[in-house]
Amino acid sequence: MNFDRELKYKDIILSPKLSELRSRSEASTKVQLGEKEFTVPVVPANMRTVISKKLANYFSENNYFYIMHRFDVDPVEFCEEISDWQTVSISLGVQKQDKDYVSLLASKALKVDYVTVDIAHGHSILMKEMLQHIKSKLPDTFIIAGNVATASAVKDLEAWGADCIKAGIGQGHVCTTKDKTGFTRPMFSCVLECASATDLPVIADGGVVSNGDIAKALVAGAKMVMAGSLFSGCTNSPAASVVVNGKIYKQYFGSASEHNKGEKKHVEGVMREMPCNNMSYQEKLVEIKQDLQSAISYAGGNDISCLKNVEWNLQ
Image 1 (cartoon, one colour):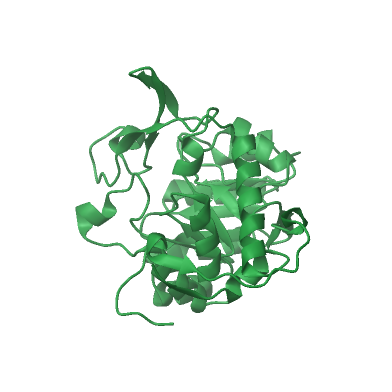
Image 2 (image 1 turned 30 degrees about the vertical axis):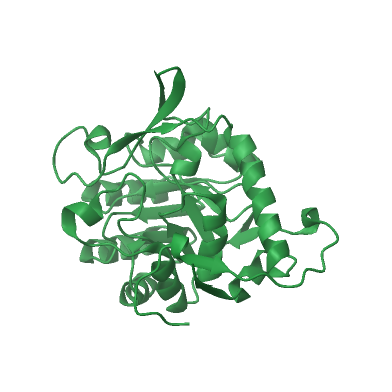
């Protein structure tokens, strides 16, 4: 279905089908990414205010996917410390230091299940060089690369060695790229185009404001969905808590913000105080699973794969 305008998740409605499930609890939300299977197709954003080592450990031990952020984190030391974890998943940039980290990880033969090469504009020569370097040093590691927002970018990243594409430009709750530069892509259209351009799995990153948006991202073709604000508002998120007029808020800021960078150079993010959702990560994950099970029921299927065949239209 083609439309003349770009579409956000909120622009989309999904059409229900006959369900043959006796109970929504029968629906499977499991997803395969690389060689591992995870409980839900959702991953917390690899941001300082969303994921921490403690939370990453919980995710690893309970079959949830995580990506550790790369800010003030030595990935080699991190991998050494968690070598006995079920899942070792890190983030890297594309600078010389990042390449040196890869070489050191390889020389020490450390366990690295997943590497996410995570930069604001992933369709770049620096990404090409980094992917080729990782492939040469860590050939058995599953590589996630992003962020991108077009079919041509997806095809290039695939050709350069990516195993998974992270899609989304300028749509995060605390991202100001669209305001600073004019470049962005509403997420439903972005995921639809990126997923249609490849057989590789696509992670939809940005624009999720409700659990229903996760289902919509899967309908657009995503294999997994990254969410920041959904998790940063949790009681046990790494985001700092503040009390305003007797209510608890969490300070959520973007990776390209002054709060994360510590400087006012190429700032493309802000800090927002979000109401605490009064749920722990554990409770939020249960809620997400149950809502996805309901979505599967409405889609007339047994597992999340059925969402790819859901009919959709404009709101």
